[in-house]
Length: 148
Image (cartoon, rainbow, N blue to C red; front, side, top):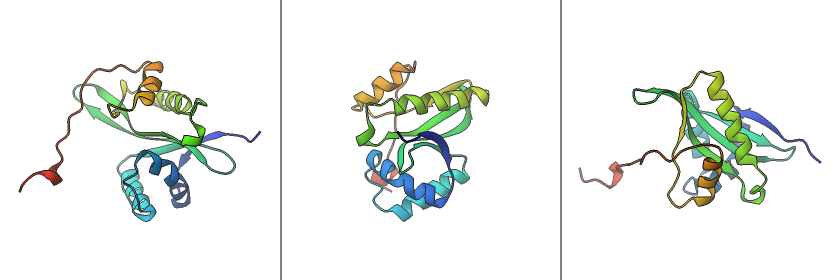
């Protein structure tokens, strides 16, 4: 049985190796090089990726950042949580959630937040099982679809 570990994704080669997992969650990211540049930009803004890795591949990833809000104080915000389809049902999402919740506690955060699509019922189950609460609506205005 191969060893699985959680580690921080930092190098360009690590980011490239994370691309197949992210592509499953974000299918609009069709260009690996653009993905790498986007992740590097986000890292420069405080984003971090941690991943469960086997000896051969990245199995699951969680991307998050810290910020302060008047409404909630210091929060750890989860941007992305992905387990590759072939590895669903093995608890990797739970393991990564617990990992970042521990990081949030160590960083003296007040809360952990995330947004999830309405139809992502399997993901909702994972979050609810980990004591997350459905407590607000997230609204967005796509400026690219607005008239000048």
